[in-house]
Image 1 (cartoon, rainbow, N blue to C red):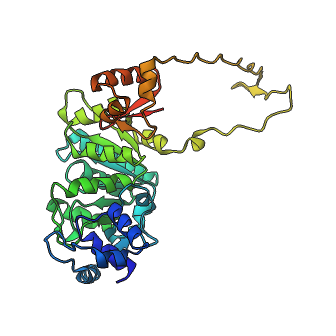
Image 2 (spheres, one colour; image 1 turned 45 degrees about the vertical axis):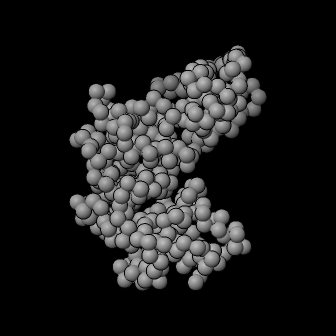
Image 3 (cartoon, rainbow, N blue to C red; image 1 turned 120 degrees about the vertical axis):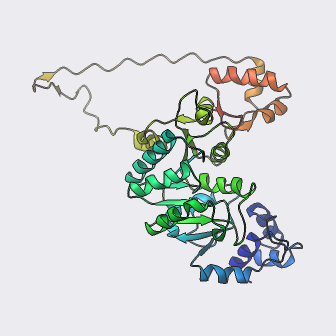
Length: 378
């Protein structure tokens, strides 16, 4: 068994992921093959010993690429997340997964407004050169893939089950069009794994992990979309949301994301601006002129106009003072973020009291609220 084959075999065991495999490899001097040899409970989803050789044969027969972290075309963005998939099953152009991209996500029960918005955003992003990622589900996901195709770009759909257990059936033709137009369909699940309540949350971390940022287009308060946004935040991805009507339950999740600190986006340019590095946003200035000289401006008629004098230096804003309790709580808030409960435990204060102090710190610009009832220091 090679190191690559060991990863394919371990991927068929539901109790082993990237974190567990890393620990097992440390115990076997960095060898996945040795870890597999000594692993005590080799059982796949059906309780059988993983038939990894047949898995590789089936992939070849169905023209499915098996991509592991040992392969050069494994998406670099996924290497960054806490628990990257051990194996990706890919139909189509695997290089799409490594392109700079945006994930558009939302409810399956989308309104006409939501579908049109997702399609418009995806088409604009595709025309601007961004890959579009989503979950190939009904509603917003399907509209995002359709929009990317309409915009002449590439898109990748991440399934919540195995490739040979395609779901939903209604989107099978869409998946075929995605592949035919230079995109791909991908899953981390071995052949035969049906989608269920466990597989979809696992899928969501890939949807967010592939992208530079995630846009929630339309979703209710209780939605898998919010799980995807939470994963995106944990992975250091930009989280954005499209506003909707305040009296639509289908927009309540997006409005809540915006309230908790997600960037509100109303057009494609907002998304691109959010994802553009700060250094690229700065307007280049000309070389400084000799001391005492100023550039000569002209009016619309061509007449010289006296240059404006330089603005006097602005006084620094006074430092906002913190109470003792605020300072205590602030020390427990990491820049990477933590849950409200975790901060309360660390500060040894009641949750209600901690929440009130965090609100005060937010007003003073010292913390920011994140999706998933989390908070981070500024």
